[in-house]
Image (cartoon, rainbow, N blue to C red; front, top):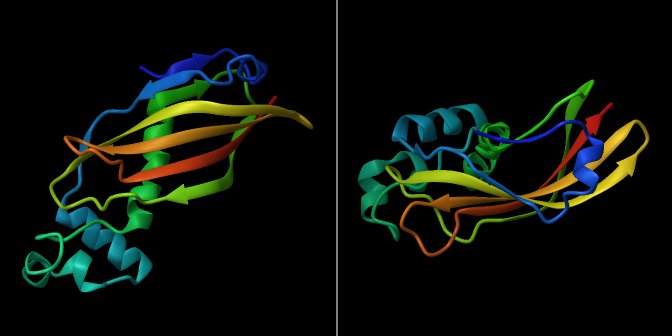
Length: 151
């Protein structure tokens, strides 16, 4: 269940709040191949299981931007802001990929409300999303996601 805020203004008083976690999902080769087709990035480390098995990770790895794009799936599972006219993905401040995601790994997102500021017509929130790999010491991705919630 997501953390629910009754309205955008409720975010202002909640800076620093741990928002929780999404469900785990398994990264399958089909998802990686589909991302490669959508972006034109067919580097062997992602799409050639035979060659990748001989590479540095012993198997294909997900594209970093595929891992980043999963935050769009995770965020609504983690947090919801009610009584808005619309929510807008405003961008990101910072993105890092500390560890690759090997095919077959399970990942999930966790999030913290890092900042919230009043803007014209609503509230801008910075949510730090960490994409965890099940059983790994380092996360796959850490992103400062910026969203605008308009009244």
